[in-house]
Length: 97
Image (cartoon, rainbow, N blue to C red; front, side, top):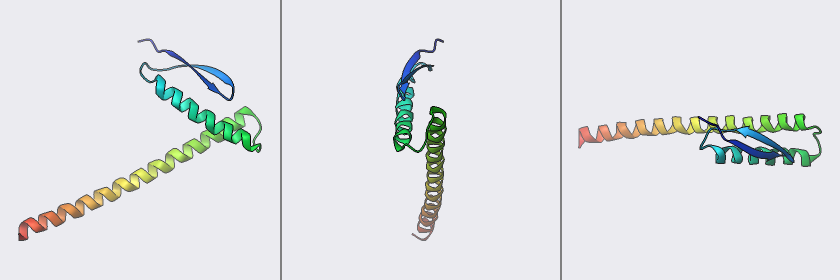
């Protein structure tokens, strides 16, 4: 199966990326998000050099992703506990009612 090549622009440079068919939009969205993160870092003026900007952007994005995962896992655990309490309450009500 052929993988289409998608051109994305990051900090003024064009990169041609092979992408699984049907995932072109997601790749472009990811590239746009990365480009925005890198532009913000570059605009701050504190970091110089494309490689350092890219690494800092990658670290920031990874931190956000991991924080989101922890938050989602915490919510999932809370939902399990609430479902268990609800099941217990309904079972108790069925037995007494």
